[in-house]
Length: 621
Image (tube, rainbow, N blue to C red):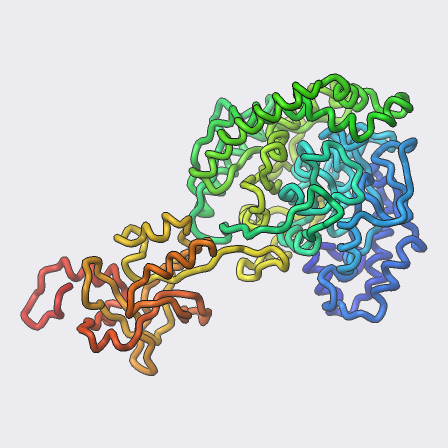
């Protein structure tokens, strides 16, 4: 493959390094691609001299020595890059920092190479990408349509294949809406998971840096490097175990009631959402209808309540001194932050607490929530003619996420099939409680790959890039779960299964053990139990289920297991070892019945209920 056609997804770059391609050649190609920007994606493209320090530190290093070795990336221009102006979409506001944002420093240390600062809705105020003195950012698929915002240029630069990933920010949907409109994965991490030191704030208490990537696997790779606790950031939070996984097995997903869905006249988007729920069901999901009313009420607090005062706190002094430098819609929104009183702020915070209690109750019924990312998309000229109302429509499904402290991933859901926006991408958002970023990325990856899509706006098939490996936990992002293989009374629907489900466990898969065990019904009761005893010869495969259990519940589960049973390593048919039920060999001497010929506790129980055909039939349980 020539350098001109090289895909910049991480797997393709890693293959290029193995084939001997130099990092300087790749970065030169990235610079060439960015120079062809006809979409107003960039505010500042770095020169060769400005990039050189990052390249020089990679000289002599092996490609496998750094997790993001030689990966070109772009930075939203409200995030600092040392010695490069940070404008926040306003030239008069620009300042030149001496240091990069903490997050950017970690990415560069991991080998990533910044190539430019990207366009945005001014002061990150907007979801459409047209509110910029550097020009309206144009959709990567059709330049007549909006790119989404405020992280507009960051999304377009990735979608066009100019960089591998980019950084945006997300307060009300700015890291998700542009992903949906440009066929990308957009990770809105848990609040505080990524450092905000060196980021121009919009609403400081609900801001987060976001990640745009061609695939969920790439987003996860960037997250594993970027999620570093920052003592200098008062809002920074340490990673926590995510406790669940969606990489296989059944899961429950919440779907808004029909009356809560709004597509603003876009029938093609409505059809894609219906298809998306069917696709999730095919992946093992069970749809649960959810009343979105309290979520939407929480969303209205972001711009209709006192939180807009945070925007004024961030840049109000500049706005008062330079009102002519600020776009009229942006100025109108930020000036609204001057009027809320302290009493109103407290009253709204109390209301949000109440709504969050109501909304959080949904997690007792579902593992994740699925919504459209945006109900529809607009032409640039239509957006500029009605900038406030149409922009509000874009935030219908996004404004509540950060206020309620949820993690979310926007993922492509196909191309619109009809209407004036036919052929443009559209997407859904998967949401879950805080610190569920990795499970959401794994489900997003499965959903994404169930469709015959390309990477961003390129012609490279998604199928050419590898999926997330669910067995490989990303560095620094602990799962907080343990898998347990069961073979008897803990199987689904059997008497002791509640000991798993009451602890939040979920079924991952049905498997067989390696053929190295003899299978016994143990003496005693009242609940009958089997035991697997490892043998050198004469073993059989045993039918098992693998369950995933929160690590915090594992100790109490193990404590209730009676001798001669215990938890040890069980060898599965595929050669992997997982924790599971094993049995001491002494059980054979204590009246256990060998039931190896059935190789399944369920089949043995069924045999127990069948009348014996003759006197020589095996003993019944």
